[in-house]
Length: 425
Image 1 (cartoon, rainbow, N blue to C red):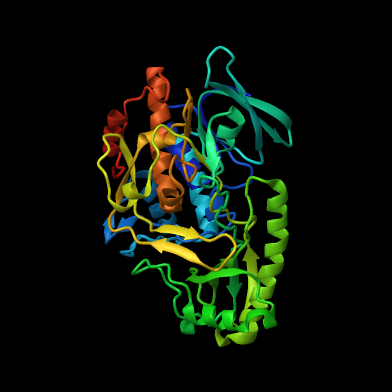
Image 2 (cartoon, rainbow, N blue to C red):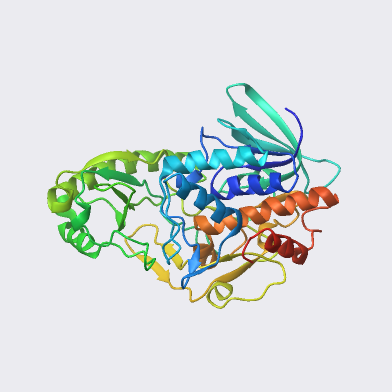
């Protein structure tokens, strides 16, 4: 295929914003996505809302991510007005707005293409020459000057032989996978704890949780978390996050088992909701995620590692390129327990967390950035991933113009350019 300045790998929240940012900053950009639409976890796994754009009623994420949310709102598929900054959206509107903004930026799209490897430059350690994709046209090699890994699982980092970790220390525990589902026929007027809009608190429905736990083994209640029950843009519909599977999203056998087990569990859980709670007596399944939602897999070994103190007590980094504000949120792998710690204020994220050690021309955006497991548990959410995406796209475009490696880019200069372009840094 033709050569590009920048290839963005993965079209989720981080990837689509990365592509827009790189293209707007003058780089010839290609965005590769394995499905036939953009949005990643937001659309293929139905993960909602986009959180968090605000902290204590003040915007902490702006720029292209907010522009994108406002475009969805214009199309009737989002609401950006709530003080919590948790932006609810319609997944179909998300898909439409995403492809419109990416194509309008001048970036190119390549759908239905699965990245299977990369070719390293034999003359320069840490430099990727090309990536390999498989699709209906066969096997293709795509060359570029710079690459952005937005796969969510640091797949390109893995293919390139750059350092990463899974779990923490000797523990390989990962947060559980979930098959999100949407129901129709729900009496949403009488279902409490539906909203995260005003206060932004991700409270589970305690009444339903306690009742399901009381049913216990007698009713063969599958493993579940929460449940967290959100409204959609239509009365009578509920978007529900509660199924739970302990596994590894980078292992295809584990992924396969997760899909099969969780699909069975979703149908069991819906029958339990119908049979035990008046609000659900007439409900039916509208859809489930195209694939299981994945909370945690690889994290890169980067030039700086965010830790929980960086999250709970914000530090002033000269190379700040994004902010976060989500709680430290760790779902226990094989139980119903959730470790949730509040974050008082928006915190700063430095450019260096996106740079794998030893990398010449690869930046990572989204949840696999360099962080301890506790810090990762706050950074991993979608709005923060989008802000990191804008930073990554801008950074590689700047590197391309200067002809320098990603670690040679001055982080303070990047900070200033992002601020000029509307990002909140």
